[in-house]
Length: 365
Image (cartoon, rainbow, N blue to C red; front, top):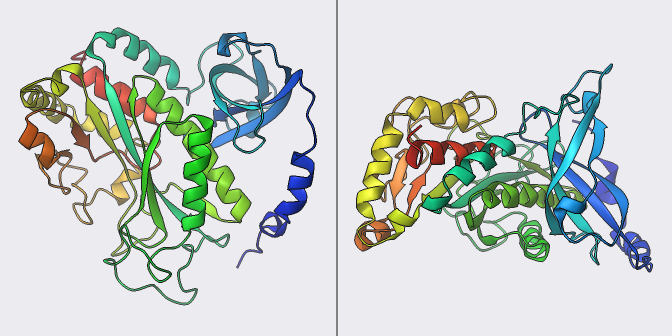
């Protein structure tokens, strides 16, 4: 068994003594955050800036060692950070900020994991459709030995059933982390709209949305960063692995709710059905876009069992959680609203997911 990480045992009350020190009025701490070469992990580093900027366009471009994040080679290692969205910092508080950044190579081309650039271009072209997104981010809490948080070390908890939206010490594990994350996201300005315990014990979900266009990806990546940072304070590990426990346990996904101005209008169900028809013809393309390994991670999750569809087949239905696309029952009753794409994996890039949905449904590409 690996030795526990020592940051789990540092006294956070000692840290508060230093965080409460008065900060000069004319400066802020800006933590620049970016997606690394894995396409699913985030990195961050902090700098001092003059507190005189008015919007994100006035923040300086920065750089980092891309050879240490699998985004460059050692002999040409500088990768540029272009600020693209600002959030309040729930950890350092005050006027301090989190800065979500795009990554660019030495030749000013986007890195391989910079999907925001192309996503933004697509969202601008589809602006008249007013695409809305709501993403349900599932994740699993682990001990530092990578064993699910709260599970018996020499066995397994009872079968799935009592854990989903459960209450009680023997049904939920890690609620303090979940609620700390929720409040931190609200403080930061993330459009988080809900949370719940999921089907597998130590598995949770939070929801972000409805967000228009590119803000879906921005808010979700910052929410993920905040989740990892909160869990760090509690000495717990967060995994976005789509199937963290093999066997008769639910996997983790990122179900994506999508609508347009037309689907939200009266008799929008007709437009929803047209959208599903378009999606049915592009199933493989979407599967490749829905996890960082072009479907390889999702293959372990989308088996047709445990509330999933098969990765090999496209399906749709009303209130059916075993389909690729679910039409919520209330949407069917109202004859307008949104569809839920249940195929994206928990470790998906929300920029890739939202871009391919808009390309297929709105732009007919």
